[in-house]
Image (cartoon, rainbow, N blue to C red):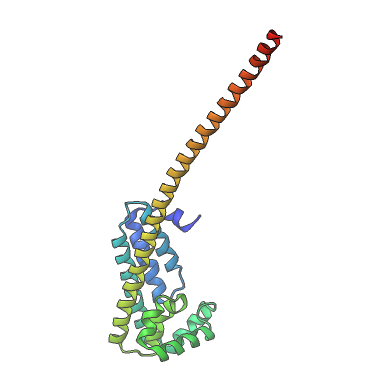
Amino acid sequence: MHVQEWLETVPAVSIYLLVGLVIGLESLGIPLPGEIILVSAALLASQHGDINPFVLGACASAGAVIGDSIGYAIGRKGGRPLLAWLGKKFPRHFSEGHIATAERSFEKWGMWAVFFGRFVALLRIFAGPLAGVLHMPYWKFLIANVLGGIVWAGGTTAVIYYVGVVAEDWLKRFSWLGLVLAVLIGLTSMLVLKRKAKRAQVAPSEVETVGAAE
């Protein structure tokens, strides 16, 4: 079953909690499809009035900020051994190559790595724990974390929601145009058939008239 189809069976309150939880766990360092859940929920909100996009964006932002903060605390306490343990548990996401790439990004960009890392799937998982492991000052991490979480979660929700609304409106207009076009084609076909039927009826009568005159 598709994610959006499954979400349609879930109450609105549960969707808010689910989005916040999945994004929070992903930000904490657990590889989960947070962006897929958020996009599906935002698209669903554009189609159903039960889901408030503002509440959805707020829950997603809260999950992102809280999850990253918890990940930071775990990373600061666990240090390098934590990354090694994660590498064994999730080799596809926490391989030595991925960790080295993320470390280079943090060393080069600092706070910007936390902010823009929210928009990159790999760094979105690494940002919190790795910032803690590298002992980034918490006030710097917090500023970048809050801004990045709000811009990413709120921005994604807004864009997908409005794209969904516009797309649905366009499809509705298209369906009306299709209906009007189908009716016009049907009427035209009926008129053409009627004309052909009349000609077919007139032709034999003309032949009979000519024959009688001869």
